[in-house]
Image 1 (cartoon, rainbow, N blue to C red):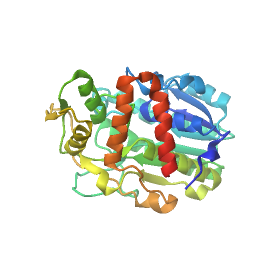
Image 2: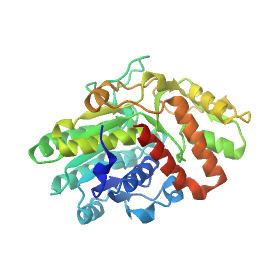
Image 3: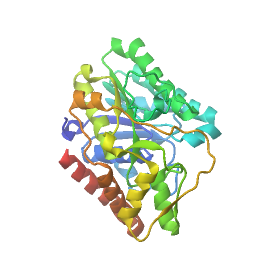
Image 4: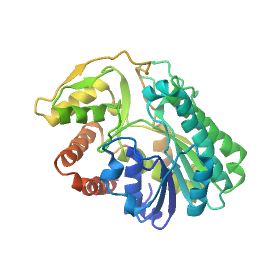
Length: 353
């Protein structure tokens, strides 16, 4: 366990800072007194949490493409960070089928570019590449929870490109970082849910959009099981990893960041819980749209990260839904209070920790 005061005055560089997870991460770090620099594309949705949170004025925010090495390195070198967290990605399975080249360029070449910036830095001590639970070779075996040592071979272009991102990080670690004072880890996170996610083809944002339109929620794959966790859960452990390996390289490694078995539910169950908690006769319909292949079953074994860091999930699925609904009501009723709601949730979560 670590203390957020570790980050006070630390210079932290975040790629993908304008995204859903990136905005929450920046908010935590800024509240902790860190000096934060971000590099990312413009927010990809309207609305988006980055704009709603008004966080841009509290940090060094830079708009750029992770594929543009010259621009990335110029901003990186100018900021001269101590800690680097790589979130930038093309994150959607369906988009990866439509745009595989862009997906590989972003998720593979983008990883090479940030790894190269870290390699050439004289100040970075801690580097974390955030990948996905989908990096594993998945044969859809029910109740199988993937362990870190299992083969990496994602099926679709998104998942496969993130498997490649893992391997690139491993290569840089073995070829370069082991010979200098840089600790590196990767974090394979489960399906992240929480207030402020407006991405397409994600179930919680689909629920919110249905509420706004006063329509039934459309569920494409109600029997697909996923490891759902509130966004603050993985962000906490990302910061824990970065802090601990900054102080002691023995903490570097490859970690599954997933919930307990009780939070691995199918999409239909998740939406049932959401509808019940929301009330007002909210309901859903099963409407598979014939989309591309996605794994039917996915679960992570989180034993390693529990043993190494003493970590355990704080907010289980029902509490996640409760927090999402609280956030959504703020969003629907008074968008000016989004930043206040974020601060409140962060304060409550880290007090529990």
